[in-house]
Length: 166
Image 1 (cartoon, rainbow, N blue to C red):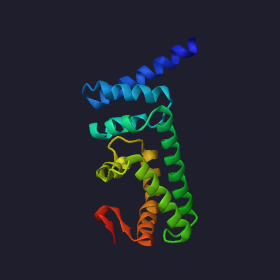
Image 2 (cartoon, helix red, strand yellow):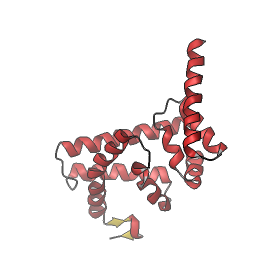
Image 3 (spheres, one colour):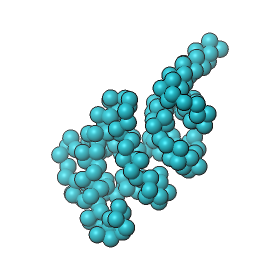
């Protein structure tokens, strides 16, 4: 019982910090933060940076389990990008293009094909106040992800940012 109460206190204190950092009353956002805290989601702080449209999309698109699975998949792809970069893999190699395809598939899955969400997702690693180790990780991964996506789009003859074909 003491352990459960200590956990509740930790979650309440973390919520308080987030509420103070947000500087406004947003009960839907607080509920999202509480759910993520209960899941022991180390990335719950990202919620405060998403706009209302993005949060509504996330609420409609994912439940607790599918959201956790998506985050885990994203983190695994991010780690893979870092490994490929450190190993000196070329983004336009078959391995780099295959990575670009997997990463793009993940983006399409998350957005459900709504490309208007891309600019918001591209900001995800540069939020003011984001954990510095998270920002460093995103920056390192993006050094491979960006070129791998470009290589994938070139290899497939597509340009999703300008309406389709290259």
